Image (tube, rainbow, N blue to C red; front, side):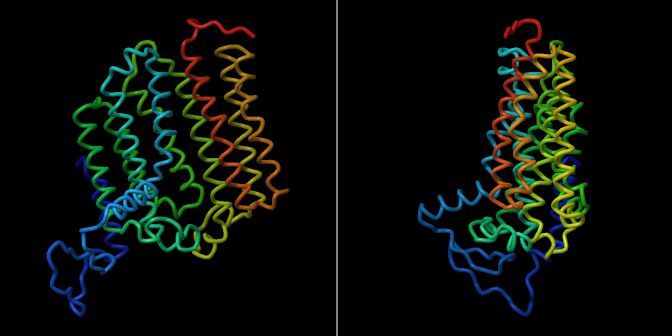
Length: 348
């Protein structure tokens, strides 16, 4: 049962693409030594390759799983663990901390691979440099990689994590498996599902190592910041992909309502999120602390309201998204300091 959702995904993919089916009208030729048959691409690959090809393959896999997200996700897990267990010795000697972080990275990486497999026709228009499109990684390899990550997740969680987290983990796996073939077709729901996957990281790690000194309120605030911040980025990416999504008849908020209305709602979500978090931090730690948090996001707000002036260009949207990284990292550090509570006295 613990590999139930990965098997469902594999079934859905095979049903959609008719994978692993070899037509009798085109039988494979006899294979030579060291040669295998790839039924997905109907090509023959010799696996005696020079080192540079192996390096290229690893580079393609890194791009497939979006390896650049590993460090931010690890920081997110570490912060969630710290808020739930603010003790260096207790946190960093806990096997559950490392396993929960690794499991989170596995689920996120597998979800990225699944997304590229199902988005193959769309990426030909929106993202022609993706590794499946360029041929750096085959669909077979992407399937094997994602299945391996899911199975490893189940084994590690069964051996090392609290059984109380089983349902949360299965929900996260289900979300990752069903996101692209099912949820991604539903406007806004796809954005909420993706944002929920990212917000899952600090909560899952925090619950894995939680102790009596946990700052639950800060952990919830962090999850809110991550969820609505990710939702904002997801909608910005939809604006960026509007033309390709429209051609492929993918119903996103920008396709249905236009770029201007989408941006208006992004700004509204952004302001509500930052203002409510500022109020909560002020309630818990004082007005000064709340204002420090709000000040971190002033530039992000200005970037958003200047987007129409820049004609919603792809370069400006990418710049706006990249600009959210620095205040986010500052927030993680800030929340970690606040987790000490009355053990640290900060004066201005």
